[in-house]
Amino acid sequence: MAYAYDDQNIFAKILRGEIPNDTVLETPHSLAFRDIRPQAPVHVLVIPKGPYVSYDHFAQAASDAEILDFTRTVGEVCRMSGVQIDGSGDGFRLISNAGPHGVQEVPHLHVHVLGGRGLGRMLEPAV
Ligand code: AMP
Image (cartoon, rainbow, N blue to C red; front, top):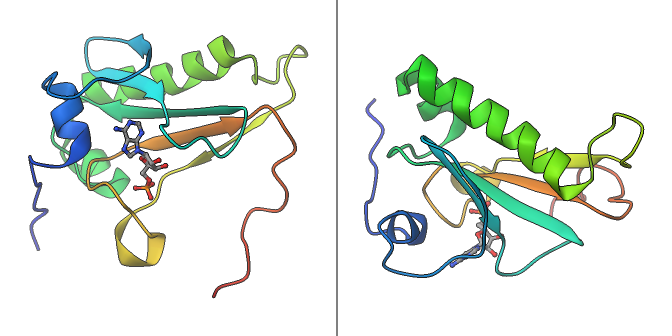
């Protein structure tokens, strides 16, 4: 099966500059910006600039340069946000929702960087 990317999704529009965003960090292949409905004191979204729907799509189709850039950008966002665990921060959670079971709202790969408070256990019971 092929991955289908919808270029009218809201993060594609952010990447094209059609709607504003609160940028934290921009690199050649990635963009990090604050979530519009933050769930924690630190809630930053990191997206690749390329047209990838999900983490599995990205891992299969992205170039090594894109994957390296994205991985390092996530780490840099953790450090910039003060949630890194090098002794000076208190930690974080990364979430990447995909598809209906993952309850993905925006069909462009994004990793949520969450932190700044205790986040509780990883999953709520299914509803
Ligand atoms: P999900 O696809 O379920 O992982 O979640 C998508 C996330 O994107 C949600 O946390 C939204 O609050 C966030 N979001 C939606 N539109 C925007 C926007 N224009 N700027 C920043 N964050 C957004």
